[in-house]
Length: 477
Ligand code: 4AD
Ligand code: MG
Image (cartoon, rainbow, N blue to C red):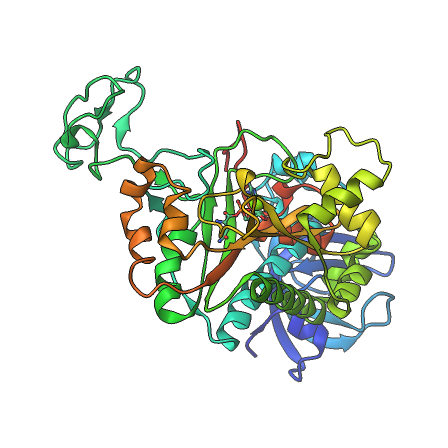
């Protein structure tokens, strides 16, 4: 008799005798002198019902078991006469491995809690139905990302977390330093190994190298792996990076995190239309995989979080994404007659109210908006012949807004130089080099994993789409 997951017991393992380990969701005593214990081990949405008979030697102890206790149960699998499950385990032994100090104050005792409250107990929320389901779905998305790319000939490239450049040019950088920043901006090395620097001078100007800390230069947490993945694209043809990214944007919204995971494919000998095709095929494959692997978790999201969540994904898998030129999108918004808070005008970025209108009202599904004004987009995006737009692409979805941002890259050195300052040219000499040695049209996008989790689960706040959210004024746990 080996140990079994709750999932394997419920799915009908052939072993008549099993050992199951997990955490108690609830326990109740029935009139006939039994205890019913619901156990979950994270392997699936459903709990396993364990029936403990009063004849068990430690029955006195069993009736004290409450939510949160860790137990190991041995017993026989039987057809369950009760409603709600096909199988149950009739216990021959119930061993308490970890008790709960005070059942009265167990922070997630069985009742409904608000998501706001559960964020304050992020160490215990994975034991709830909702956060167990999110963790499983998030895992399947991540696995499906790797499977999709692997099956389609992409190479996973691990780009650095510590970087010297601001890929997006938005200046939302977290500085990486060993300097003691408590010394009122004077900058003091806290580790002697760090470049041999002692006390640094005041900020400003360009201090000598040894005063610039560990790396001998300013360094930051990456906002995107794109610039580092492009060189691999121009050697391996189809690549992607998938890792944590960091943005110090002070937007305290339900769509922004300071630390989030980004999936960034990059394809060579490809243009913007090829990229939009990739994005669409890729998203559909992820949605299909979640629907296939998680009927129970998705049914829970449908019943408790968002009634349309399954139907929405099924429709998306079967339909074609609407593709709109930015200019067309602006015309549609202007003609909508909606009283938007932010004005709609050619040359301005689309706000989330505009994105929501396009996806929810106009298209009733995902929309790919292409060819944005060049002045609102990053320097690396390829200039279109009209002189005023770039080959940029955003994928927008109902409820969430932008989940993908990408572009065809500027592969012509002169055109790239025209969009770089001298300082950036010096900094990114190696990025320019790629345009000197075997440059080809190429394109890539970034997909925010947490925004994708929101869309797939119907959850509302991005802080619930990642185990430990980092947002302004909050980095607990
Ligand atoms: O549109 P963004 O800024 O694009 C880039 O970073 C490109 N360098 C990607 C590329 O072409 N390889 O970000 C891409 C996606 C957004 O569409 C969004 O889903 C997500 O990353 N994202 C965030 N997710 C959570 N919190 C934030 N603060 C985010 N900022 C961007
Ligand atoms: Mg973007």
